[in-house]
Image (cartoon, rainbow over all chains, first blue to last red; front, side, top):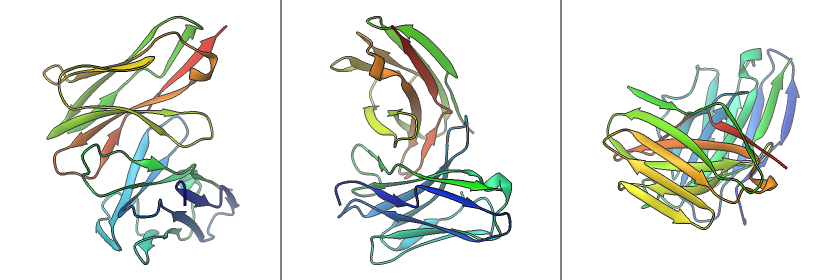
Length: 116
Length: 110
């Protein structure tokens, strides 16, 4: 696609429910990143993929968070048993390759998650 | 350790010049990014500095001093549409992670 696409754009859920957030990166971009942005905070790194592999999952806040990527394209971030502190905007970004010359990331518009 | 500091909010007048500062402490520092983010929208890339000095791109310029751990973004001839958050981010050698500051919310007034 022309840009990074994320869905849903908004999700309201009840505490304890599971949610799935989807990211469709720019075609041909091998690197995919998930960040979280809480109100008034900077972007917090969660995980990145090189192809379908996630070499570093250390940014995931807890074992309730998981992510996968299939076909070197679409990625899904899953949050199980959501808690109110999970409320944030979840941003996905892609880049041509990891450590590319400029490192420029192309961001999607994010999925705003609200846990009641 | 890793730390990025930038002011929370700034206000400036349309047509004026504003400088947004960013200080960083990042082990293995490689380069410094600036991103612009309008409310409810995706961050968009503005600039990337690896070497010391000033990089100019139209109305926007970015400066880096590696020895001082300091960068700034300079916006000239401010327009109302420049009202946005400006995110400073540091990259590390051989690292895929960008470490972001909390962002500076800029309000441009008529």
